[in-house]
Image 1 (cartoon, rainbow, N blue to C red):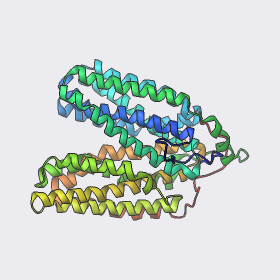
Image 2 (cartoon, rainbow, N blue to C red):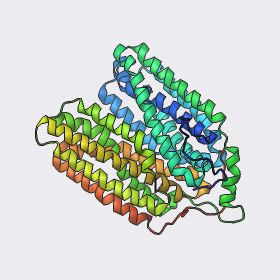
Image 3 (cartoon, helix red, strand yellow):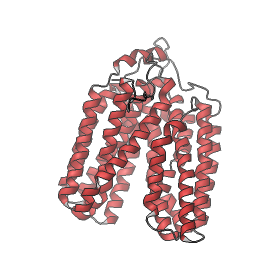
Image 4 (cartoon, rainbow, N blue to C red):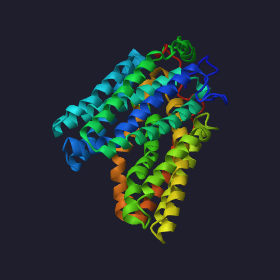
Length: 429
């Protein structure tokens, strides 16, 4: 990770502050909050808008979203490379307004073809923008506080999603074209608000630190992420752990309704438990994750917890409704603890194994791995846990249990700053 002379940029606030004291991190937190509130508004209503207002069938929406997800997988690397050339901040100042325009464009969609084209464009911008933002954070924040800062940002993101989802309830109640479009307008405004905050982001002070960290005397060029076998293997194995998202969003809702005697309300209860735990404990879970070995160990422990969560979910098939509900809540707790650890470990691995002169490209590769897991995740979970019940959950548990140690083995031998190689100055803004 890139070092910086900014020693005060820690995700810590005084008792009288709700936001971090460091101005750079404080602005990043505000950007993340505004963006996630807008995301919460849009994600809560988008499927209903596509089906009830535009008139698309659920199958058409699912197909369009799948195609868009594939587009998102392939957008991270080119956008990351572009960020390495022109600067992350400069690129994001363009991406933000484009994302706003894409969201507003849904109000004018009246055919499946137009829906697919627009959704592909919006998803490519979103996935690519995520990689560029990750590269910006990698270059702007000091190495020693990087993981805790990202943990704070993720906590804020989840809090914003909860707020946005709650705000969208009014649109769901109205169930009208006007109500849904209003949510999209607010989401578009959130992108513009983030762009305004980004324009004032004080990144210039960190450029010198990044340059000093990489050095300017070595004649070797930056490594290429797509030829970095260790990085690709770590990315692939961490993507396996990212299947946990599909477990939470696809597998559990269907399992609760179709495979257990628990009430359907448990779907919401499990989601609330997950969101609250991430908001409250993500920063704490990042403690001790300071280098590649500790990050790999965190991922391995998290993978075992994910496996344990799957086994507890399987047990919810047996017994009365109250026992099933209890098992689901315990499973959600264990699952979320695993998610917290694998997230913290993944951030460090994605940064410390990267060449700091090519953070955009490396983050693009890592985010593409996550995006691929999110695309194929629903299919994997359906073919295992949903279709085969308890046996499928045991299979998933085995997949997670094997992926954790494999990731540790892949990262073995890479010490702190393993990805660091001297070279020319990087582009931050």
